[in-house]
Image (tube, rainbow, N blue to C red; front, side):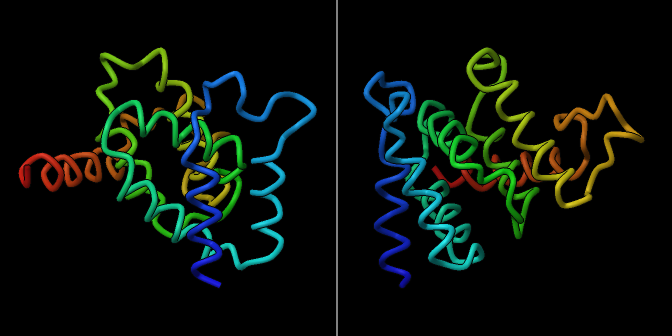
Length: 153
């Protein structure tokens, strides 16, 4: 089972979201495969493998942005995330938002807001102007990731 999830995860995330050949309208092969995966296996096993793929294979800003687009496309932000702050922190830690805001800013914010609101960790009715980059939990995770990632190189 785990090997199936691992192999399908590689197939789903080892592609270029921005390539014109990726899932053209009317032929959403990757999206269909993601839905089939979620129907066949427990989400907890899938998200563990998706996290593992991100943390192991996505080391450049471009890789992380591509992964985040695919993650959002496969509706991963709509599902339970066992460690949402760690996950969100990694996205922001790996991507210089000053350089890549246009490519990643709204995307990362949307992923963060979807995950945290779905898990009732934020309430947009109480804080309609919520900003992930001002959230102490996310700021702490970004710092932890940067210390881990960039002090070990």
